[in-house]
Amino acid sequence: MLIKRARFTEPLPSEITPRSLFESRREFMQQLAVGSIAASAMLDSALAQNTAPRSKLAARANPAYFAKDKPTAFADATSYNNFYEFGTDKGDPMLYAGSMKTQPWTVRIDGEVKKPMTLDIDSLLKVAPLEERLYRLRCVEGWSMAIPWVGYSLAELIRKVEPTGNAKFVEFTSLADPKQMPGVGSRVLDWPYVEGLRIDEANHPLALLCVGMYGQTLLNQNGAPVRVVLPWKYGFKSAKSIVRIRFTETQPHTAWNKSAPSEYGFYSNVNPEVDHPRWSQAAERRIGEDGFFAKKRKTLMFNGYPEVAALYTGMDLKKFF
Ligand SMILES: Nc1nc2c(c(=O)[nH]1)N[C@H]1C(S)=C(S)[C@@H](COP(=O)(O)O)O[C@H]1N2
Ligand SMILES: [Mo]
Image (cartoon, rainbow, N blue to C red; front, side, top):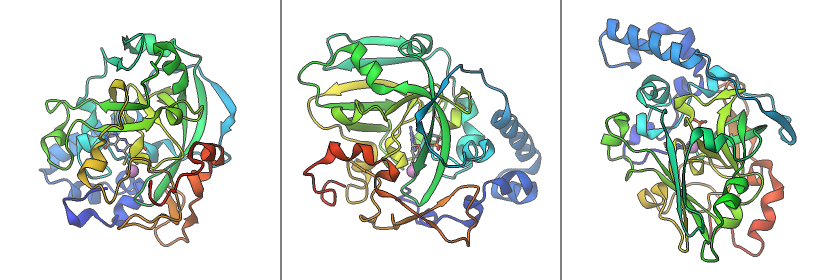
């Protein structure tokens, strides 16, 4: 994703094999620009944070949304992350997101709705029964994972706040607190992280309001306590650690689109036929399964979720990328 620091435009082999972080402690320490005692303590706490049991969430697996893919290992899904509020390296979120306070937490839902409300996490958990769904997530950088998320269709929450007839779009805003998030001091993006959807996209049953993964509450690096997951779109559309959901009449100004409009469009549907200027979108590497030299697997239109195609009937998806 990174635009302003050219040396990260190609993923390093060390980023492709996050397990090496665990397996090669020495190599990992060398990546940390701090003294070895501090690095050792930091790594210990990061690994504890990475594997510490979170609260269990009772969720029913939804067979209609359970991909046949082999689930990505928990250790990979929680150590190879993009969460720029904590830094731009794949290991940064695991190392630094522990400082984010996720309790208490509220989400403000407002804008073009009849019933604006502020919900805490307990109230959010009660909006609809929790489901477990195995979704593929495909990053524009050319890697993918398959993760058992826990949550419910975003449509359930949308129904509760009763959008007005003017609500054409939904905007998601992530927390941006420089005291808790070291990356928010950088100028990589214009903070806060903002993403958006057209309202019919947000109402598609695949769009998930997500509160957990692997049967437990989310780890901070994956966007605790609440995020969205939009499996037919590139990963960056799935905003993490959301504090506000706003319904608007006009198209939201999203953070990635503002930073590089020619690289990141508003729609950002996974599309093997439309390449990003710096990365091919035709193929991908599954984290934890496909080695650096393995043949890449083909990326599918809409990431293999053809049921969303009807949302885009008549649209030129090269123009609206
Ligand atoms: N707030 C926020 N949300 C974010 C990001 C981010 O940097 N900040 N990165 C996005 C990108 S590029 C991807 S690929 C996914 C990664 O989600 P995961 O780390 O849980 O797999 O989160 C997305 N959501
Ligand atoms: Mo991404």
